[in-house]
Length: 298
Image 1: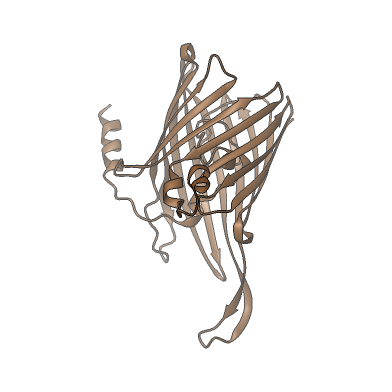
Image 2: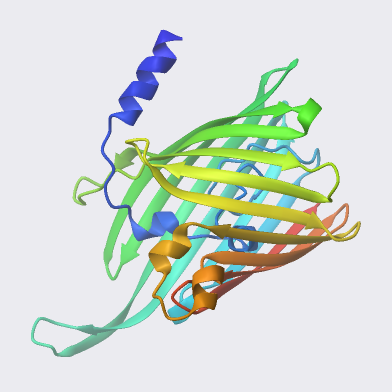
């Protein structure tokens, strides 16, 4: 217990700074539809820690996300159950586009590209066989490319979730994006943050409701997320989400943008072997991102 308290004190004493833009990219339609919430729910193409074990079969998943300004993100993952641990491996890639190149004399040179790539491996298991709690670990290599310059970093995340079956309630906490190794030629920054989440299946509604809180390393609240997944029919799910990011994105252009900014919606078709989904995320400043998910069990 003393070791755990010491670790918490050490982590909470770190100072929070800016984070690399690539750390904030969403890679799945689930992320878009929940507006970044629903962190305790299964999302094989996201960068979140997988704390849910939903299948004994192998799962292949892929996603394609369209951001404004021609930015695109793609993902592919493979998940399987091995020795009572749910293993997830994935690759996430975001392309920021092609840019015109100029030298210091403003003379036209060759075009260049910019992109970020994640290679991720994580696993989830039971803390104790007779205790309704699970742990998750995620290790990720992050490779960032700008023209001919390439930098690489390794991040690690871990978390716990406790299931209270009597109340159909999940309570979880994670520590995310702990910087382990980075390119010494690049001045890297402290990206770590904490997350606390609750998810509950409502009794009188076909709805799984989630509340998520994101805190910085000083334990100050950064953002709050509210999301839910409605079971419209046996095979159709409707996801909705919103967050307090709407206040940071608010440009006071209209009341509707203030209300619906930083919100998401998505519809998903599910059966025993297939999940197909489409998600949208609306910015408070105007515009939206969209994405497609495909998951196959085999």
